[in-house]
Image 1 (cartoon, rainbow, N blue to C red):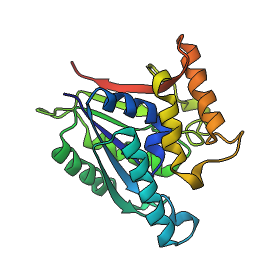
Image 2 (cartoon, rainbow, N blue to C red):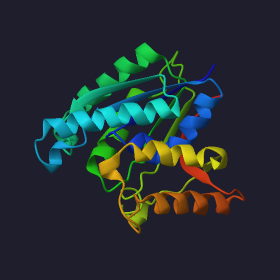
Image 3 (cartoon, rainbow, N blue to C red):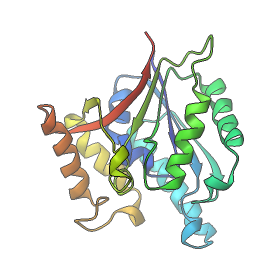
Image 4 (cartoon, one colour):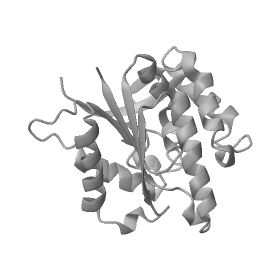
Length: 220
């Protein structure tokens, strides 16, 4: 049975980036684990109640998507560049040893959000293909309002598309749990924009709705 680990910088990234794909994995009775590195709120002001609220929203969203287990590391928002990569990658390695995934997803390496970039770098270290590693796939996803605003010289260029037509509504329902993160159209994090994005990627490969990824490494 496939065991999937999704490594995210903030609560909501898992749903925005690949909520439909998570639902497809869990719908096939595959175990999905989510690791969230930062609390995602403190950069907006030190409000512990909002941090707690965001975690509860993440738990509800992940429960709806069928996630088996979610873990929060609670690093400060937008300060991951102040944490040694060896520390972050070590935390991720500890989770890998516990959950034993064979597929790992994380952020695209050139997002405008520096937390996303740091999480990619730390994850890339943690999943390096050392002997006896059980990780056979390393995949990165896009995050609306972060990936498309990064450098166009190193833009997101997907080579893997997942048909999420049957679970698109579930993705939107899960994102709705993050009430403070749902923005009005035409913001990229509005429900309409998220739908349009999935429709765009789907239409590029002959599908109604799709989530897009870059396959960094696959070992067969």
